[in-house]
Length: 183
Figure 1 (cartoon, rainbow, N blue to C red):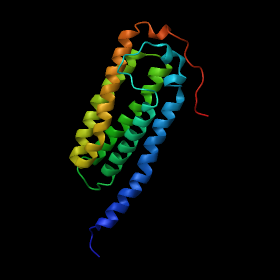
Figure 2 (tube, rainbow, N blue to C red; figure 1 turned 30 degrees about the vertical axis):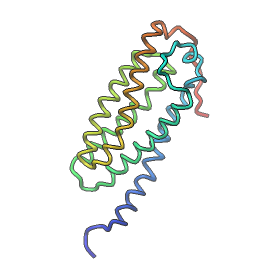
Figure 3 (cartoon, rainbow, N blue to C red; figure 1 turned 180 degrees about the horizontal axis):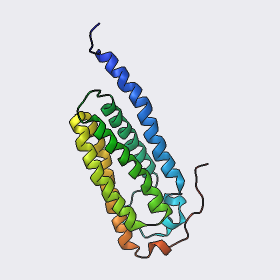
Figure 4 (tube, rainbow, N blue to C red; figure 1 turned 60 degrees about the vertical axis):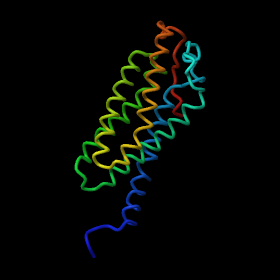
């Protein structure tokens, strides 16, 4: 038998990677979202003045779920590219990207640090662009799967910036939550 895998074997390998990466990325995103109340469940956020471009609360979990699934598929695509140059650095950048994403919601909704959350969005966007470039060098499809994240994070940055402008004393608007929603 030759050393090359058949198309079916490659698809099966991708499926195994996706069966790990998609749930893992979703779990990280879910855990981050459960650390502190968000949206209409967060009294601080409810009390803030919000710009007209603020989407309805139901859209955020839908958008993030889709984005996290796409991120998991992008990671699976790169992880499945055994022997590809640049695979390890691309995966390393991706891990940092996911960690940074997980920090945003507790920083914004929990700590009420709009400026710091905006700075983190800038980092997430820059790091996401770098990750997308490295993913593209490994597999073009993986880079395209990152694009919705870059668009949504850009939108979130504009939204956070406007919320910060409309609420210069945001940290004192309402008391913060004292408990986690993890249980």
